[in-house]
Length: 316
Image 1 (tube, one colour):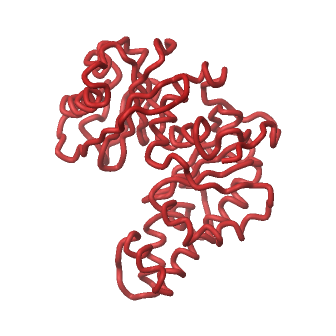
Image 2: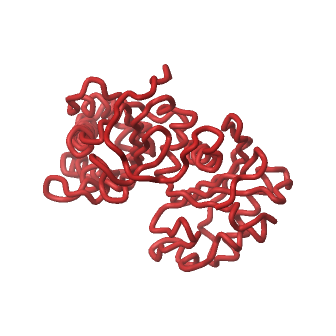
């Protein structure tokens, strides 16, 4: 794929209900104003491209001609081809050549439009300018309706090797009497609360109730214990220096993180909550595109033999 031209890049994060976009400056990975829009009313691929271009116009004050773009997308998605394989969500994009359609509208070469898994983008943002900056071996876990995961070695994504599940995805790894996502997700917290309190409320409501509701406290404690077991056992062979927690549930880290830490035997492993939060995927998109500026390696690769603590951790 062609190198990024210039020092600026459009970055997009395709979330569960909305799209965020910003102009990112490659020399220091800073973002311009972040703009966003919901896509719930979009019903066709052309309308989706229109929405992307409308956000590009707002993010650049209508000066996006010729700029390349990197988009963080959930899977399943063919990231090399720029084609969505999702049918349960954004069905109008299934099989659609988004790379060429967007490049035509942005006035850039199709090779300048890139796609990145959303969990990978989140971790790379934290590696480039956040909580994982300066660490050699980093794991990113995004905690929400599911659990996203990504692994990085010296700033480069890896998807195989000791301690790395198939394709770097932990959500469907067998755990207890199910899979990881059954125990580390919003539905796990909601289910744990419902079984104790006899009523169903949202995870946000459970978090709000926690200061005075023992059932809410226990639901988050159970979540934290499972997360600690997953990190401490399933990922142990990766020998991570840092695990960064992002996603909506991470905003309630005070309710579960002490229980997570208690389940991890390695005292050297640091657990950090995301510094960049919603901006992490946008920064990660730019970090991946400008990798030649920040790190000579940019492609996802297999993990060689562990070499922990090869870099000096940042103080952040």
